[in-house]
Image (cartoon, rainbow, N blue to C red; front, side):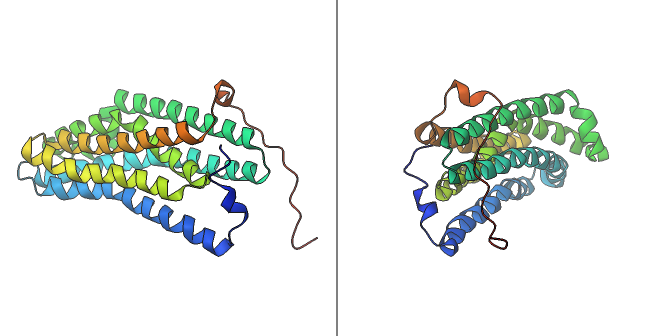
Length: 248
C-alpha cells in the first residue's frame, strides 16, 4: 500500500474516524441490499412476470446471501489483518494479505459458481422453487444468470472492506453506489423495453456487480503494490505485542 492514503489514521481523533468509516460502511450495506429490492419492484410491475417472478426472485435471494457471507468472511478478515499490519508498519505483509484475499475470493467464487450450476435444480427445489411450474422456470432463468455473475459479486464485496482499510471508505461506498445505480437504470430498460423478463433483471444486476468489481480492481492497481509474492496464499505479520492499558 502507498504511504499517502492512510497516514491520517495515526493522527485523527477516534470519534472523527468512527464517523468517517461507519457512515460510508452503513450506506454501502444498505445500497447492497437495494439490488434485490429494486429487482422485486420492477419484476412485480411487469405484467408478464408478476407474482411468479417475485416468487422466483425470493427463491434465489438466499443463495446470493450465501455468496455474500463468504465474500464478507474473506474481506473483513483481511480488513482486520491489514489494519494490524499497517499499525505495525508492516506494509509488505499487508500487501500479501490483500493478494491472498484476492485469490481466495476468486477461488471460492468459482467453486461456488460450479456447485450452483451443477446442482441447480436440486438447490432451487430445496428452497421452494418447485411450488409451481411458472415459479420454477422463472427461478431457473434468474438463478442461471445471477450465478454467472457470482465471481464479480463476491470479488467486489470482498474488496470493499479492504479498500476501506486503506483509508478510502468513500471510494468503497462510491463503487457500491455506482453498481446499484446501474442496476436501477438497466432494470426497467431490460424488463419493460427489451422484455427480457427474469433474464433482464438478472443481467442488470450482474452488470452493476461488474462495475463495482471493476472499480475495485482500478483502486487496487492504482493504490496497492502487488506482485507475484503477494499471491502465495500465506501472510504473516510480526508486530510487537501492544501494551495493556489496564495492566500497564
